[in-house]
Structures are given as structure tokens and as C-alpha cells.
Image (cartoon, rainbow, N blue to C red):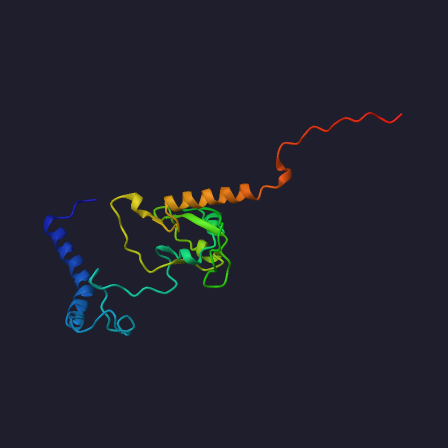
Length: 203
């Protein structure tokens, strides 16, 4: 097959360019002025037949659905440390550590009794696959997916979000109190058993 001439290739380039301009040019002239007086927060911005096809991100943002799956958030006051979210997570991005409370922790917003201290509740969003399973199994609905989606970081460690309810110092104090409680409640017969005295059989 013979190669096309130099000027013929230039002609094909202009033809291809013109085909593209026939699509984009009408949008440019039609929506150029309308965007000066219409905001993305208007209710009919995306339903209008003469809408613009681009937005000026990040000054303008597309409205997000309420059921969108984005960054996870946990309300510590409503968590009962049941560990269901960590067990169902397919990528193990949730880490939970808990121990029995020695005092009354009260109730969650849905009336569930809180019995466990929660020193560690970490979510590694760098591992998260946004499946939403953890929010589905949460009995108190304290774990939700928010509308925050643009949270890039320079350090991967910053993707680990800490929702624990105790500082390391508070955790140490409460664990010591738990050990004291266990020791005080130890039954009397739990110590070392004395050897039984052998009795002589009766004649």
C-alpha cells in the first residue's frame, strides 16, 4: 500500500479536527454565558436540558447522594464494641480493642447498654474497599459512610483514623482497676488445695 502524500495527511487532520469542533463548539457558544448567572447549588442545575457539561472543580462540586459510599466515620458514644464491623470487613481495615468496664458507661442513643471500654477503634481508609458491609451489620448504626471523598494525603499513616474513647494513660488506669476488681471477686476456694488426710479404715 502506497503511503499518503504529505498534504493529504494534513487535509485529513483538518477534517478530523473539524468533526470534533462540530460537537464541542455548540456547547461552548450555548453555555458560555449561562454559567455566569447559574450556580451548581440550584435545584434545576443538573435537570435542565440546556445544562453545562463541565464544572469548575473544586470551586463547584457535584451534589452527592445521601447513600454514597465515601469516607467512614464512627460515633464513639454509640459504639458498644461488638466487633461485628471488624469481623465482616473483607480487607481487615478496622482494628478494635476492648475490655470489660468497671463502672457504668451508660447507654447509646438507641438504648443499648454499654459494657465494654473502647481504647482502640482504628480505621485504615487506605485499605478500605468502600463495600459498606461494616455499616450494614452495625447494631447501633454508629458507623456510617460520609460524603467526604477528597481526602488525599502525602503520608499513608494519615489515612488511619483513630476513634478510640480512651487515651493510653486512661486505658492503663482502667485496666488496673479491672485487675483489682477481678482479684477482689476471686472466690475463697480458688487458692491451692490442701492435701486430703488419709484415714485408717475401721476394723
